[in-house]
Length: 477
Ligand code: BES
Ligand code: MN
Ligand code: ZN
Image (cartoon, rainbow, N blue to C red):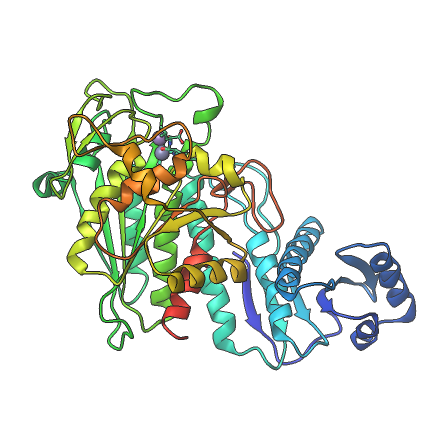
């Protein structure tokens, strides 16, 4: 990982990443005239990142665009990623970050983009080297060591979520997923973990999770993480629930090959995101009681696989008529929602790669959100999403959609009508909780076919930064 540290003064011998707002700020960088002119020309030509060599060091400069400030922070992150890529292609191990601006947020955004952009999943590469860039030092009197460490912790959690998504099911089955969660909890003070095994899941009667697991040779797990600080500002916890389908073939309602199954190792991205978020909350000692639940299994068409037409008794006793075994995410999330009731949570959030409909509706540029929580909560999530550029597009949650889930023979069925599939999926989930509820569908942005700015190809780790930022607000930090 690219590690950020704080430095008290800048050095004239280090490769440098800088952010400026006006051309006169170039002068504050103390460069020889030719270097300044060279940079100016590139900025005039509209380059997001201008580069020059001066006295044997590399200077990389981004000029913040005009326009709305929120937009420009994201531009700076993207410029940071571009700079990191340039440093990597020159084999550089380190650089300093500075700005003549008083505004520390901009240089932090530059760092964030460079750190997030400097990721590669290399576990299975037997030759070649990873990114050369290993550390960055930030020079700004307004940035304190705590903020720097927060960015390191959050980036590490995003990297972890990406790694988990990028791991194929040949390594990351439900049991291994739980082993990774245990390791994380062991290394995070204040974070408690409990992993329920198949016998315990059976004893509890989590019929949804067991049904999805029936076609598998590997057992399911149910992962419970809890962070409960002494001086929490909330009386009852926020429960985050993440979908942990380690691989989704569709089951008997098999997905057509080749393409729709190619990246279904990403189907635990919601689980990875909630794990990353709660770990960061604990590392940063947020005064907030948080629980994360991740039901985990693969979904396969084995000899005993659950079949369309089956009626499943869920953890809370409700019955579900299975119409499509590819609508498996809601089956396992429903059991987790029932389990969450025991905490009487003030808020429950599900995060899941739940529907192709969500991805088709808004693509990879954000996630689909909906729920029964009040406007204030919804607005807090939306603004955390804007801040972190993990945006939430709020969809309607009208009661008319509920009808689509009624079943002739059971309490409800696991499939809605032909349209608004992301909403009927959310509606299904809402039937299993009595608490204020938000559902976030990340099927679009969880996994990218091509890198985009600081988001790599493959697992993006989306949701970690959004949820952490939201929790931080809730903790009044
Ligand atoms: N895991 C998929 C959704 C998905 C699609 C995630 C594309 C990432 C990218 C989910 O389990 C699924 O199969 N959903 C079905 C639901 C349908 C059967 C109601 C879908 O969207 O087709
Ligand atoms: Mn599916
Ligand atoms: Zn799925």
